[in-house]
Image (tube, rainbow, N blue to C red; front, side):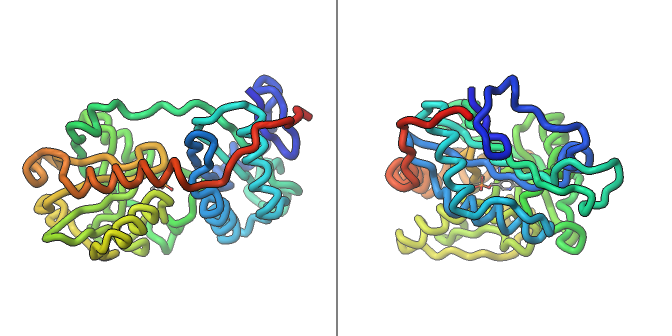
Length: 296
Ligand code: PMP
């Protein structure tokens, strides 16, 4: 496996970064998770834009232009000769001293990894999954805007631990006002009375690329999409519920906090959206050129 590390494609064994890297010491940095479907990188431009937006808010100057970063991703996928792969793009503050001062870090570290993805079992899509609500709340925007896809995922990890303890793979995270924000690594949608609803990003959610693709698909189908506020009451009483994410795509949710959602089966609109999403992701995207990319 070849890893892109600061401008070079190097074998996995040689892809090492300093223990003084502030990404390691402090979670100081940002990242992206991207899928490649049959040689098409899904919504690469949106992912690159989101990465640069995260970095901007973190006052982190990425030492590559958007075009260079895009090329780095394309080259890494091509170099590994994989047509279906998961790409992890990481930019950290880089190495510094043991203090938190980012000014002591002269150069951000840029890493691109193209690795196999472990997918959810088919059963999740056929039967739907159960969620619980985590007691840990989403970090409020006043502290760290959840729209930043930062290297600091402790808040989400604590909620994920709660999910697993309850026998679930995902948990709903509420904001400090008690309204629904998102899940630990996925966005959340409901269908109610023929309308598709999802928490507004200012409720404390990451602007998911899958979320926005689902909104695009739904709008193209003429559906009403409402980015809004919602409480657990709205989720429990929804006709359908599903979550979205790059890895998960669209997963039906049939049980939340021991309440059965709708008729307890994946909803028809959920399945229609999943079908449309699966068509879209193989037809749209930046094409990888699988010819001579040299390790450097
Ligand atoms: N929310 C969080 C907290 C995430 O980490 C992710 C990414 N896994 C998502 C939502 C979904 O975003 P995307 O559709 O861009 O993968």
